[in-house]
Length: 60
Length: 445
Image 1 (cartoon, chains in turn yellow, purple):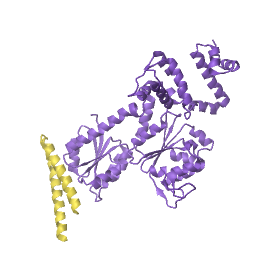
Image 2 (cartoon, rainbow over the protein chains, first blue to last red):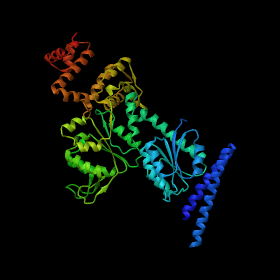
Image 3 (cartoon, one colour):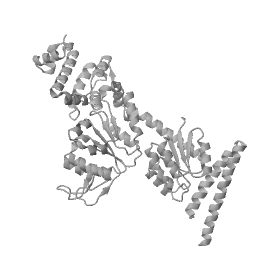
C-alpha cells in the first residue's frame, strides 16, 4: 500500500462514514441497524488499511 | 425535477448505500465492478452515471475506462473521487467526463450535479430550436432530436438536403453535443481541385510540391478527437475517395511529401444535396467508401415543405435589429414563395429588407426583394433538389417545361391573368406562353 492509496482510502471511507452517520438521524431502527453494520465494516477496513501501511513502513 | 435514470458505479457498499439515499427520488441502478458496469451501460439507457475513480480492483483509476462507454451511450458521466489531484481531474475530463467531484458531503455534491445536469439539458433543449436551428416544424424537430441521440457515438452521419437547408449548422450542433474534445473542422469538397483537396485534407511537408514553402497541417489532423465535416461529398473524385477511405479505416495517414504517418481520431459527418444511390449506380461514389461514411442518414426538408418556419426565421434574423412589419398581403405573398434557395435565400432576403428603408413591408417590396435575393444568390441553388430529381427521372426537357409552366402560372397570378403583362415581364414569345398554357390548361382564363 502506497501513501497515495492510503490517503485515497482515508478520504473515501471517511467521506462515506460521515454521510452515512448523517443519514442515521430519523432512520427507522431496523434500517439503522443495517447501515451501522456497513459503517462498522467500513471503519474496520479503514483500520486494516492503516495497519497495512504501518506494516509496510516497518518492513522498510 | 423529473425522475431520472441513474447508474452508480461504486465498489464500496457503504458509499452505495449513501448514494441510494441521496438519489432516492430517482430510479437508481448499481454496479460494483467494471464488468457489470459495462453490461449495464451497454444495455440500459441512463440519464446520468456516477463513476467511482477507483473500483477496488487494484488498478489505479480503473473507473476512468468506463467514461468513453458512458458518453457514447449519451449518458452524462460524473466521476467521484477520493483524490482531488489536478492530475486525475485532467485525465477524467480528457476522457470525456461531464462532471467531477471530490467525495465528502454527498448531499451537496449530488444536488449540485443534478442541478447542472438539468440546467444543461433545459438550456440545450430551449436553445436548440430557437437559436441554433430555428424550426417549429414538428417533423424537422423530430429529425434533429433523433440525430442528436447519436451525437456522442462514433457513428458516421450523412446529412441530406437541398442547398441552404442548414446541413452545416446541423453538423456543428451534432459535434457540440458529441462531447468530443477536438474541433469541428469543415471542408467543402466541391471547392477544391483533386490535388488541392488532398493537400487540404492530408496536409503536406515543406517542398512536397511546387509552392509548398512551409509544412502545413491538414484537416484530418486538425479534426483529431473532433469532427471532420465533408460537405458536398458527391463531388469528391474516386481517387480521393480511395485515399480517404484508407485514412478513415486506419485512423492514420501520410501527409504529402512525408514518410511519417500521422494519427487522428476523427468522426466523419458528411453532407450532400445529391442522390447517393444514384451516385453509386453512376459509379461516382465507391460503395466501400459509402459504407464507411454511412451510419445514420438525416434528411433535412426544404423550406417550402416547412412554411411554418418562414416567420420564426424572419424574426430570428431580424432579432436586435430593425423591426419590420409585414402587411397581411405581404405575408400572404411570402407564404406562397417556394424558397428555392431555402434558409440561405431567406437570410439574404432579410438582409435586403433590413438594408432598405421600408419598415412596413408591402407585397410589392416582397416580390422585388425576393427576385433580388434569388438573382444575387450566385452560389445558391436555383434548382431545388426536387427539381433535380424530377429532371433525372423525366429528362431535362420535361423539367424545363415544368419550370417554365410554374413561372408562367405565378406570373399570371401576380398580374391578374393579364397575358400581355406576362409576355413583357418574362420577356417571352407569345408562342412560348401559349405552349405553356396548352400544357397547363387550368391556367387559361
